[in-house]
Amino acid sequence: AVVSTQSTGLVPVAIISECEPLEVCRRFCQHLERSIVWKLAEIEKEGDEAFLTTLIRFEACFSQLISTAVAGFISALCFRYNEREFGEQLRTGTVPIMFESLLSTHGEGGMLEDMCYVMGHLNDISIRLERSEEDDSVSVSRVTGPPFNLTVTLSLPVMLTDRLPVNVGTVGVSVKLAPLFFSHGINEQQTIAYKMKETDLQDRICAEFLANLQTYIDKSYIAHNPLPEAIDALQEKMKRLQSLYKVTKRNKCAEFIVLAEQIGRDIGCIRFTSCKSGKDRTSMSITYEYCDILCQNHNFERGDIDPVLEQFRRDGTRYYNTFKNIGTYKYCFNVLQCKMLPAIYRPPQGTFGDGALQT
Image 1 (cartoon, rainbow, N blue to C red):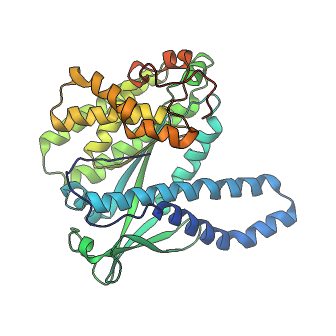
Image 2: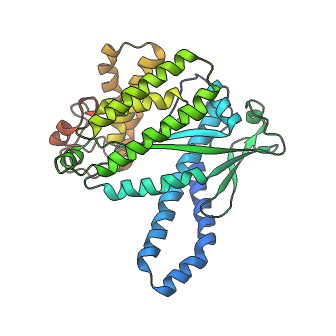
Image 3: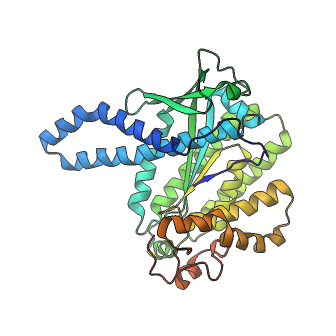
């Protein structure tokens, strides 16, 4: 699920096709298949089924990750083209992209391991921007390069390139993505994980996340941020996040998630949130983040967010998303599962099922 990083009040200056993420995925899979088909034949001949399975698994996971990342980048291009922070990112050639996982380390560890592995290869992806005199929408024109060093080329309409702070021109501009990935389980399975001391994977992910986040802030964000007070406030948040990380080693800590999201928005990250289905836990996190944005950016009183939060979860797009997924307007939680969720991530009465629903 894509979360808008800033509220600009702007309409997009270019049309984003609903099929574009699927087109990225399809083109990537075709390109990767052509690149490794000889290797697959060789592996099959040798009978190394474990490696073959791993390779196919990587292709399936990475094609979805790169599709998500490119779709988020296209969205940022069209909605954030006049933001100072995004402009500086384009000029320096590095755009931070934050992934938030709500997967548990008990029962969902395999999915989390997949995310960890493919996330590391996102550093090797380049996105090239080229000006198109013919197109009136952003499109993926080609995917080139070896499997682990891909270049995704985007064709941008003139009305967009004229508004960007970088000169795309006839030569084009290349940018890299700086992935920041953290995970914190919030459901009943994570409760079991804490009881059984099965949190090592989550601990390692968050430790690496904190290190990568601090590195980006020190090397990239501070270099082009002229406001000392903003930097001081950000560093204070980082200190608080470090202390909350110690709490996450022992218990669920919703404040860690919320503060990480805030820092991601502060430094201009393209933000994503996901769980197992991207429907239930994701909906709870995203709707709370909506309210946090209202408080942080629009002077909304935190004491007044409860009815707004309930309305988001009862009538917002996330609630309608449940129907599109399972054919009924219900989040897939039962009463016991709701009690195991942190308080801010519990759905309103009447919006969740009895445990028989399928995720």
